[in-house]
Image 1: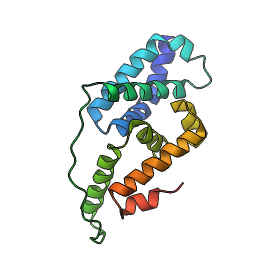
Image 2: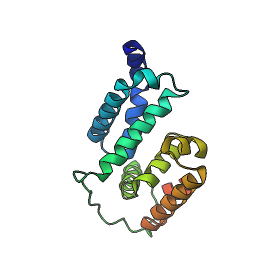
Image 3: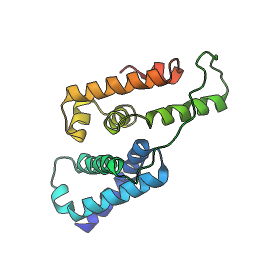
Image 4: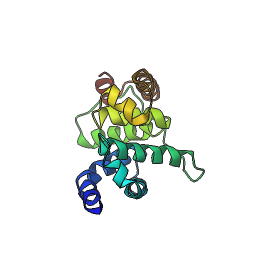
Length: 170
């Protein structure tokens, strides 16, 4: 049992950490989240490894931990600066590209946890609506509603961002 968990953790650990980072936006918090989720998974590993998809099961644990942490009082809200003026023309400068990407990350952090989770699972984990619904535990129509509302909110917060215009349709 321990050997199969070690193999799973070694093989899927980086992907779980990436998923947690995309949810939290903070590397240290993501590491804590994955560590706690893997501790939960280890206690139930004999049952988890018999499921159809242990990876989806553990990803769900990570997501539930994230949603639970968001509800705790210890979760800090991050204050962000006002979005830049969208009337300025985009530039080919890599520094501006990175600044725009950081801005999108900050805006993504303002979304409700379910909407953020759906967008992360869709655009970073490349899951379809049915797979996202299985991870989150809702209907595919609910996934589409969360995605639509999340993308609309991001567009409201930062109208005219090239990254959002290009990534907004699936």
